[in-house]
Image: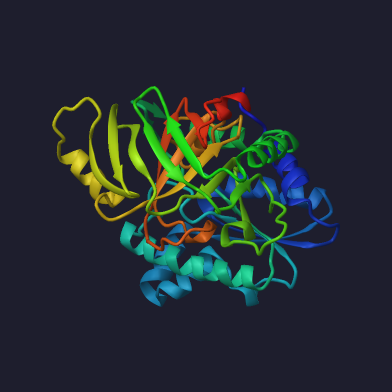
Length: 364
């Protein structure tokens, strides 16, 4: 039976947003996410907060980009700090939270608008506004692991990832961070053939837990200044020249192997040794093989998230691990890149500094 979005919204308001009575909370979204953001607005009002609504019509976004330019369109996606009441919390539809482009807006234009919109996000954070980035899927069918899912089925996957016990999530994340903190060398393996070793020494492990996680003894990193919904992972910036081995992951119905040498992704090929094809070559270019280092190691901790490749839900799924090529400067690393490409590893086995205990399984 489908979840009641009104009840899910009430849970998120109570456990994540936790507004003060009478406090303004700005909601900014594109019209395809009306069902979720309208439910949030009603839940906020019922909790005594004052929702401030900024709804953007997708077709109007395309018109604004064409007639007025990228900067104007970006302001429809994420408001500027001077447009937000002082001290207000802000809930934003994550600009890249849905697959596909807005009606009438080609992918290149969409990318330019989203890049400018993230500049507005930086302004909100600098002004001290608490910010939540909320992903919600665009309508329509999509193919997932060879199965065609309709719009309601995809929305249900997101709703289930939001409708979780957040206190339990935070306890799980805290236990993982305590165990991981101080480790230097991490070895990651999985039954598909992944066997990669990375150095994370001196880099902080971050907790994505449906709120701004507490930080002690250091300044907040960029990723710690806001939080994501759905949430649920712990992650770290890998030392950029450290990754050695191979990462095996599923893509397009087959298993691919990414080879890493001294941190750099150097080759991508089918894991069974068969020749690559145009699809593999295109994926290698998109991932930045030959250019990008392995920059992130993360562990999913959300029991409501699916391991299927729908948005970013698979990297949040409890019992999965992920690594990412490209940028990690927002969460403690030194790589600045326009790329950040996550690769999901199922049934992972982690070893810390030679300790062969299957850490992640022990805490699921």
